[in-house]
Image 1 (cartoon, one colour):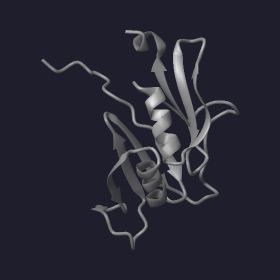
Image 2 (cartoon, rainbow, N blue to C red):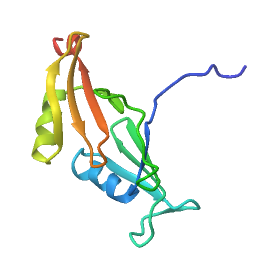
Image 3 (cartoon, rainbow, N blue to C red):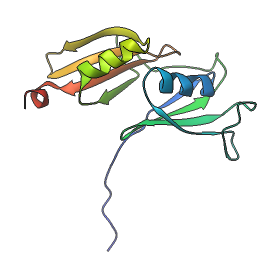
Image 4 (cartoon, one colour):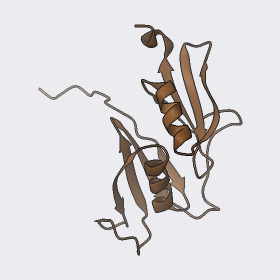
Length: 140
């Protein structure tokens, strides 16, 4: 009998002008680990070749980056919306960590009427990320 489909995770993929610079920013400012760079044919770590793709991760969350010219970089985000929403635990501690690392905090942490405590940041490419914690889970 075939296994039933199960969704385990989703990884946002962002198109950015400089994959290596973006991955290093996520490492240095947001505390992610760089899992690898790819140039289209194979994985590599060489700084002398531009990366076409990278994966960064923190705990169970992965973010993918692919390269495009600055003119092709785009976001589908409407004004006031987020490019990605990451559900986390420990949003206040994360905010302190991000501040210490020089992250651009747009707002928060702040309690929302829909039961989330959110921290909103802007990355090095202008992408808006929200980190949200379930308020009811914080009380337990």
